[in-house]
Length: 112
Length: 116
Image (cartoon, rainbow over all chains, first blue to last red; front, side, top):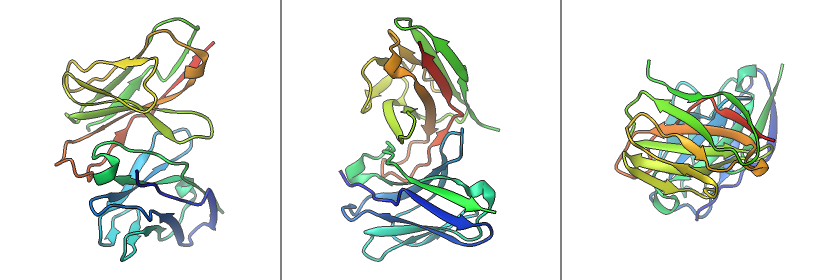
């Protein structure tokens, strides 16, 4: 199964941009790249997803490498509320369309 | 507003007892999922359902069962609770898509279960 690799932890300052990397070198052509985050003591919440092109929404941007073997979640201006564990997940194709397979994620700390 | 709820939010039980955790969603989603999360770990899939009368085993299904009699509910039953099942349990739902993996899952707030 295609897997993702993320740093265990990252740290940033409030109101600065944050770039969260994800490697997925064995991604298949039909796999979507999803990002979820989990705030302390809450269930995961959807952040963004994409297939080939870069994507933007009100929460974040997703930059996908041309070869699709890596992607970056971009928080344009981090707030304290963005402190969470961020999960990069592949969906569809080799992963099975409906299921989410969570890895360890990246724990993001935001300094005031 | 549509939502997904779980009950109870906290539960303490004894080894060997049967426990049922409730999950209810009002989005009319076909797909529903149960995950568990242990300290220091990501979420692991227990069971999932793609529609009424459909259930499937996930990666950690031993000791758990589910049944889907309507669209809104997917209760999770621990037949004989064990201390190893102490965990936080999350329910999720999503719409059916073409099966291509573009759907979004919406998670409930979780149930913290302690088995003594």
